[in-house]
Image 1 (tube, one colour):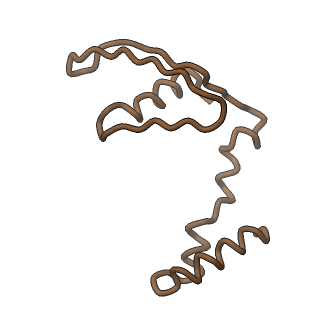
Image 2 (cartoon, rainbow, N blue to C red; image 1 turned 60 degrees about the vertical axis):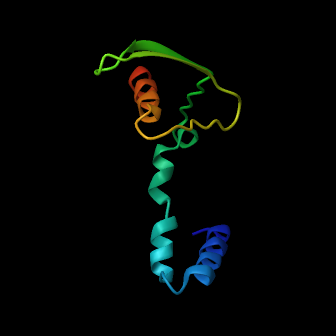
Length: 97
């Protein structure tokens, strides 16, 4: 484990030691297997600049979605059951790994 990660674990333990053991905190922040799915670690990278799709939902409602993304971090915010996950499912099905 890196020195920086140990510092984070120790700070979390100081704050939450009454609720979590150090081993529980380590298990929560452990990310060894996460690196396998990171695009930079696999040499693959997908940059989405614009998403546009239209269609009809199973309930008959029309969909017409268009969004331009900026460089860096973008957030999609919406109420539950408004289609946030659907956007990522469409992107994933269009560009499968």
